[in-house]
Length: 276
Image 1 (cartoon, one colour):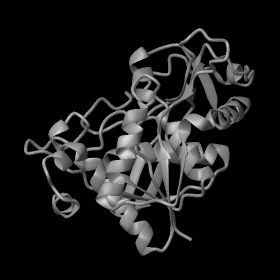
Image 2 (image 1 turned 30 degrees about the vertical axis):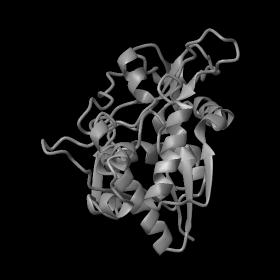
Image 3 (image 1 turned 90 degrees about the horizontal axis):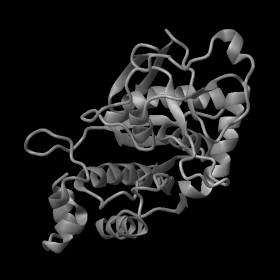
Image 4 (image 1 turned 135 degrees about the horizontal axis):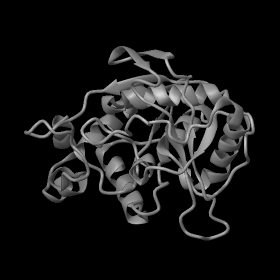
């Protein structure tokens, strides 16, 4: 049975580019007579706002996109911690004390026209003997996944075709957990986009992930995570991106192309769909 998902992040108004991807996901799920989830990727406490979450639901329904069930990532933090603990216990995740810039990027999905997580220099990667010690979770520490250097990760995308990435060359050890910043003793930190997205897709039994082709490299990372925690991997459909007249990928900075703006201008759903 087909199981798909929409995964908007409520950090701004829904724009035309994301709407097109969600429309494709919706059409593929309905054509397969499958189940479609709406997953609220609301892990970033600094940028996610309830008014954006409400607006995106209203705009999706206005466009004709419906779903069968929904969940919020912010309600699944204990599950993500359990996954992290398992990775630490197996020596696959290690504490990292460097790169605030990486940490800022780790909560949101990378994109091809922004700074993807840079290739890590392994400064904090423990030696083999040290990694066998496997210290327990420390909420005041960030964590990275140790990637198998030199391994080729291959998958065949249902839209973009065969893909090939080499761990340690195309991407390095990547952040999977951001340390607690509030000083609150109950604050255990937050999972990165890569960890939360991968384990949700696997645990929810998603059979096909539809998203933009700017996330092809993220798929290689997430396949490693899914394998590490023993969860099934979905198939992937990375569609082309909508771009503005200058060739720049449409993003939430394009306020003029937010669905809310287009609606206010009097456009109908059919007219918006024609822009895809």
